[in-house]
Structures are given as C-alpha cells and as structure tokens.
Image 1 (cartoon, rainbow, N blue to C red):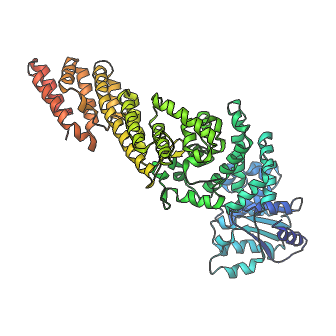
Image 2 (cartoon, helix red, strand yellow):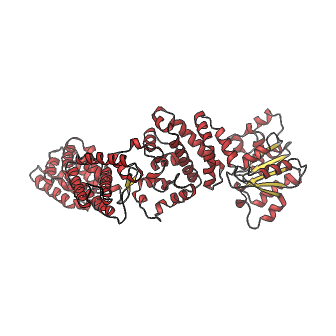
Image 3 (cartoon, rainbow, N blue to C red):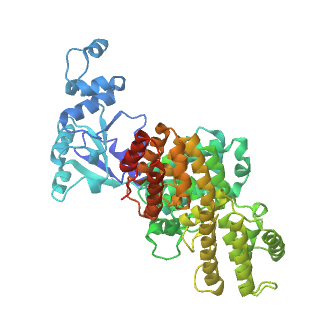
Length: 589
C-alpha cells in the first residue's frame, strides 16, 4: 500500500473547516493521482475539475460550470463560453454569467487536476485558486506533476497556496487488480487475473510509473486475446506458456512504445537486415537493447527474430493497433513464444543441435541429407541454412562431413538449383540477396559469423550462391524479353507497368538482353498509335536519372539505329512519324 500516507492525510484534511491552505498531490502524469483522490473523496461533498488547456480565469469558470452541470458540456457551450438561454430557462435561472452560475453553492472540497497542463501563468493560476481558500474557506486538493509546474522563481508563490505536498507513488497491485476487473471480455479477464503477479512485476520493471499507459496496454491485449479465441488461433490460446510469454512481450513493448522508450523504427528493423548485425554498439538495436536490460532476455531480445512477439507482427499490433488475420497467424507462428519442436524443420533442428536431444538431431541430419541429395531445398534463405548446418557439422568432426568436401558439395548444389531456376525463382533469389546482408539471418535463425572455419567457409558460399542467382537472373532475361515483345503487340499498359513501375525491372538494365533488331521490327509492325505508346513508355522509363540504366545506353543506340535504317524504306509520312518519335522519346542522356 504505497500511498497509505496520502489517503490518511487526505482523510484528515477532509475533516478540517476553513483550513486556509491547499494540498498538492504530486506525481508524474499517469501515476494514479486522479484515481486515488476520487477513491478518497467518493461519497464526499467534492467537485472534480480538470484544468487541462485553460487559458484564463474565464476558462476556469467554464470548467467549473461544466463539472457541475455535465449535461451542458457540449460543443455549443464550449464555443460560446456562456450558458445558452434555453438551458437557463430549463433550470429556471436568470441571466447569470458562467462565473456566477458555476460558483453557486460550490461544494466544500474542490479538486483541481492537470495544473501543469494549463496555458496560464502560474502566478495568475495560483491567485485564482487561492481565492477559494481565503474568500470562501474551501478545502483545495490540487493534482499536478510538480516538476513541470513551478519555475525557479515560483516556489514562493507555492508557499501561499500549498500547505502540504504529498508524493503519490504508483500502486501497481491495486491498479492492476482494478484494471483487470474492468476488462469486459470474460476469457481475457480470467487470463489476466491468472497472470496478475507477472503484470505487476513487469510494470515495476518498466520504471515508467505510468498506470494510464499500463491500463491502455492491458485493454489492447484484451482485444487481441478476444480475437485469438477464434478457432483459427486455438493452437495458440491452448498453449498457456506461450500465451504468458506473449502477454509479457506485448505489454513490455506496448509500455515502451507508449512512453517513448521505443519508436516505430525500432520495430521496422524487422525489415532492415543490418539490424541483425552482431556488433554490440549497433545503433539500430540500441533502444531494444535498453529495453532488454529492463525486462530481461526472457521477455525482450534485441534480435528481431528472437522476440517472443515476432517483430513484424509487433509493429502492426503495437504501432498501428491492428493486424489482419493472416499476419496475426503468421507472426504468432514465427514468434518464439509458440515455437514447438514437433513443427520444427529438420534443418532448423540441426542448426539448434546444441539445444536438442542427440537422437533427435541424428534423425534430423539423416532427413536433411536426403533432401539435400534430392535438391529439395529451393528457398535461397533455407539453402543457406542447410549450407551452414553442414559446415558446422564438419567443424565439430561429425563422420561423413569433411570441410573441403562439404564446400564442394554445396557449390554443386548452388549450380544445379540455379541452372534449372525459372524466371520467378531466379528473380526471387536475386531479391532475397538484395534484401539480406551477409551474416544476418532468415526465418528465426542467424547465419554464422566470425572467424571460425565454418563461419568463414559460409561467407564464401554465401557469395557464391548469390553470384549463381545473379547469373540465373541474367539468363532469365531472355525469356522476359520474349514476353516484352509480345506485350508490345498485345498489352502496352502491362508493358509500361513492367518497364516503368515494376520493382524488379524498372530500375534494372534488363533490356540489354533484348535483340534490338527484333524489337525495332516489332515496333514498326504496329499501328502508329501503338508505336507511339511504346516509345512513350521508353521515354518514361528513362526520364529520371538512374545509374543502373546507364548500361542500356548502347542498347538504346542500337534500337534507334535499327529504327532509322528500317524506316528509310517507308513512305515519307510514316518515316517522319518514326523520326519524330525518336527525337521526342528516345533521346536517353
């Protein structure tokens, strides 16, 4: 009961007649001042008034009036700053001012909250409030974050108004009990009640002292819990340990975000491969590491894929307040809180060999080798994990795994899997390496890093596989060019999309692989309107400088040369149309 002294003193203060001084309850925003004073003054003759945003004495008069007559607290009253005639007639009152009407028969105890959040000079504010003490003999209870209220020269003003200052400390047990009991969803309420001790501990670890933020975070989690009662998510709610880990991670991240300890960018590192780099002073994970120090690695880790609440899902839930069902299911599946051995891929088990039973690991190695021999692994991120697992097995001296032989076998795998790659697969491989830096990770696991033999060998294979996918992508461009020729004839909108807006092709020199003569012949076979559309698409492609497209200069020169040569035998009007299009649309500089 950290605020027993506050409650006892206020109980005493409420018995005083004409005390001549006010009492200040001092604590940061959200520490529970309002809740505490409302508990103490419940069923007492007291009036609670928030001074948030008031600018002058008239605004305070209106705030008092609105507190006394809440039925009149509407937009019209606030805008006009006075009581409407209809309301006065309703109450059968003459034409009083807001100040006169508000102060009619005021209670003996006045509670003014949010003093530090007014827009009034402190001297003017305290002078107004002091009139209730000196002229009307009221009891005055003031609520504020004192550190934001008084300036260096204003403590003498305080002495005239405040006779006693009481520091309010967050009462986590009482607050958590009240917050949980207020949760409407029965299942969520029961779950939170079962975990009250952990919630209290986590709140204390946060060091924020902000009970309002805790309440908001608990309400947000209750909403998530209600969604998880859907049959689609039964495997998650049925995992009590996982749900408890999810609760702790959710609350910790939510409190940190709401109080400024974390920013959206700290969640977005899930999309930033550099965030997984192992350097201790990595600025991208600085705030997450600080949060880890508060709550411990069992709740928050600065490595995105090791969070109990997967970080892409965390970004949606914490920063945006919502995630669709697909993201929710995928995110929870990849969250460490719900990791299950029976769902673990064999390569994953081998990578985690030091944490798994020997029999389980040996079975996983056998299965991984079977799939490796059959070239069943096609995801480049998983292929790299398999390479890493085989290299690590070689390093620890496992039979049938010799380092040089493993490296050669992995290179052969890279060659074969990329030789048969489709256009889609080749593009996916290039995209993967474009988005992922060496020594980072994929699907919940880091790749090896450091100066160990297996780590250095892995980096070689990483670069080799990347090169293989780059080469496969170049080979795939010939198929792409055939598609572009066909689109020039049949679907020029789609052609424009691929060349000017597609993330894989718009800024890449893919047209180098195009036969300039064949493209020129195709263009000249088109009706003039279609011909103009294609050349305008090329103009749009090159209108913004892009360093990678410099490589297409030679190809474009070949294309314009072919067009000029072939158009020379056309009728004058058509020849003029072609030459005009070249001048207007195909001058790439």
